[in-house]
Image (tube, rainbow, N blue to C red; front, side, top):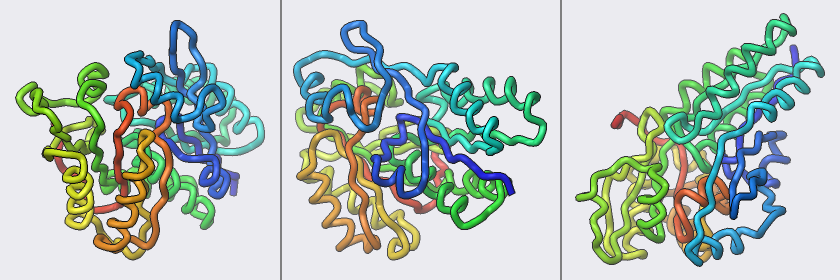
Length: 294
C-alpha cells in the first residue's frame, strides 16, 4: 500500500509537538503587515504569539491570504514524486478558498501520476477544530487504514466536530467579517461575549452571549458538557489568543466537569488570530452532530 501524506494548513493551529507526533505537515497561508507578506508559520519565527497579539492591541490590523497555488504544487508534487498519496484537510470554505486552490492543483498534477491519489477535504471548521480532524485522519493512517477508508471517515466525522469560541473584544470580529450575525446580536453592550460555533457548512455563527469574561468561560464548559460524546475517550483541544490563564482555567473545568480524558492547549495561530483578535479562546471536541446551517 502506498504511503499517505496527511497535510493541513496554517488555520489548523497545531503546534510543532503534535505535528511531529502524528507526522502531519501543513501548507502555509500568508499574513500581511505594513505591506510585507510573510508565510503564516505555526512555529512563530517572525514574531512570538505575544508580539503578534500586542500588535493588534496597539490598533494595527494584520491581513491574511490563502495558501499560494505554488505551495500546493510543491507539496503535492514532492509527495507524488516520492510515490506517496496525499490527503489535504483544509480550512472551511466560507473562511478560505485554499481547498478550491488545492483541488485545481490536484487535478492538474494527477494525470502525470496515474497511480496516485489526492483528496482535498473541506474541514467545515478552522483553528483547532480543523486540527482535531487532521489528527483524527493521521491516527487512522497510522493504524493502517486505506486512503479510501480515511477519506470516508473524515468526511463523516467532520460533521461531529464541535466548536465553541468566545472573544476578548467584538471589534476584530466586526472588522474581519468572518462571522455571520446581525447588528442586534452583537450590539454595543459593554462586556458582552458571544459564543461562536462553526455550522455544518463551515460558517462561523454566534449562538448565544454572556455578560462578562468568567461567565463566558463557564458557558463554554456548560456547552461542552451538554454536547460532548464519549468525553472519557477524548482529548479536548483548547486554543487561546494570548490568554493562557483562561486556557488553564478552562482545562481544569473541562477535565473535572465534562470528564475529558485529557486536554491539548495551544496558541491560536497568525491566520485565525488576525481575524479574531487577542483574548479569544475556544474549545474543540467530537460531540453531537452539527445540523445548524445559516
